[in-house]
View 1 (cartoon, protein in one colour):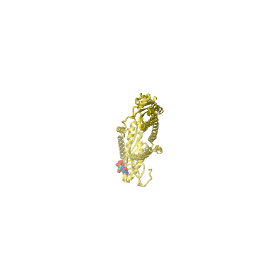
View 2 (tube, rainbow, N blue to C red; view 1 turned 45 degrees about the horizontal axis):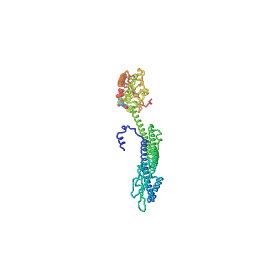
View 3 (cartoon, helix red, strand yellow; view 1 turned 30 degrees about the vertical axis):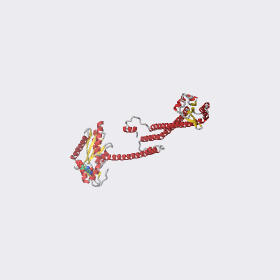
View 4 (cartoon, rainbow, N blue to C red; view 1 turned 90 degrees about the vertical axis):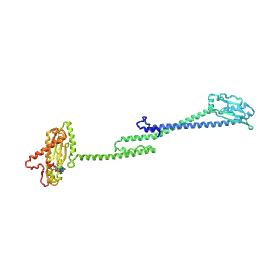
Length: 465
Ligand SMILES: Nc1nc2c(ncn2[C@@H]2O[C@H](COP(=O)(O)OP(=O)(O)OP(=O)(O)O)[C@@H](O)[C@H]2O)c(=O)[nH]1
């Protein structure tokens, strides 16, 4: 990891304010750098190589020419024919890329050809000297000072060195050759640069476009919120035709598939839990024996009815019900028979009120009924009577005996008898208790003092329930 990235990593994503570059931008920037660096280095090597080759071949040619000239001028030098020597020098300079030439008498080598500016001047030691007229310009002089290429060869006669031929290459011709070579190299560099950029851009497109397609695909998949959408099963991540990218797409598909299955599993479990919760709530709200509301559920509904009636200024009635002499049934016919009577009482109470009203069992043989939206408080006693008469029907017990259950019903009206649930329950309970006591103190004509719960004949008789 480079210093820069380590620094960014240490800072965390929130701290680096610079915009995060895309992969395409990074690859393009890198390919620009790589392209130009490689083209420049190749260009540099080519230029230096070409210059070196040119230099070596020029030196070699010049040496050959110097040797050839040494042979040519041998006779003229031996016979001291300066005119013929100069003619030979002139001929050579005319057709060859040589800017200056001279023949110096003696065996010693002279390296100091006439300097630019002194060209064509015959020095004291020179036997013959010639310099091209067009090699005397400033460009030619500059070229010679930049690129001095010289060669010399001895003029031999009878095994003795008679003179030395010295040649100066035409540097301006060499430089113009070099400029052509440089132009060629530059052109090659340009073409190579374009080719490198095209290839690297294609490579970037080949890698980045599939990545962008995969990113777009994942965005679309995220938008498909429905877990059972058939698109999830059908749609595959796009394939790029590049092994690693295709592997990434395949892994993405597999991950999506796993997530989808996991989500479906979670949804199934969630449904099961919701179902179980609903069942438990229902069980908690319903009395196990009779199926009417439990005390807790009844109190919740009473509280919400109360607050609603308080806000809206409504009126409702609450009935507190206790079975009369229920213990006797248990004692005489058994607990199972008592249960049977409790179920019958609950069913009859439920059938006597509307669906929006609520019947609850407080426990034992105590029931409560909540009647919503009473139009007039004066209707409440009639409902109590209705409940009483609905219950007081014969019930056939499991042992075949028939009993007629009796109930005492106490009444409380909101807001007349109380403004809170506790006040209303207490008022209804007290009313029920007083009515029970009143009923017992005044026995009905022809009935025993035991009350309204009467043992029926022991023979089995069909029951309305
Ligand atoms: N079968 C049955 N009996 C129950 C159940 N819960 C309570 N009991 C009995 O119901 C009876 C209720 O007794 P009380 O209300 O005190 O007696 P009662 O005979 O109804 O007396 P009064 O209310 O004064 O008429 C008790 O004997 C309890 O054991 C139940 O779920 N099933």
